[in-house]
Image (cartoon, rainbow, N blue to C red):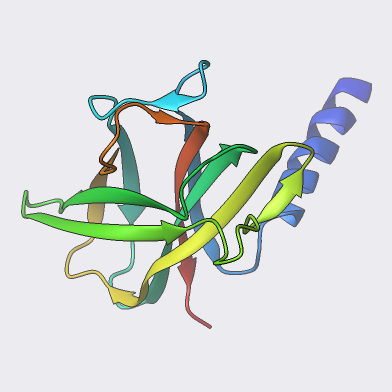
Length: 155
């Protein structure tokens, strides 16, 4: 009985932390060495059950104090359930012009979220695949920890 209550409490706690309207969130670790190699693309499978809804799609980036660039450039390949590929490039700003880091700090780790497509409408239902790779001039990209995809319903 205690085990069931513990599991229930943890489950409720996890769902309570999610913003209202959040339908998908996944983060993937890049490397234990705090670097992201161009060849290390990350793949996300996002289920779209209702294509009549409008979404905000965000990318999250977790990085460590010492990240030297103002942005992280990423290339995102979207593959629809029917196989149509679309490639987009985004600049995720992680440092202000004065050098201050952007995001939520936890000691030397920073979490940032970036809306890359607001009011996004999907044409199909089914599983969309997103392949994300860094598009920076230097390889590896140092002080990078995680990349993630977030999908929220527009209110």
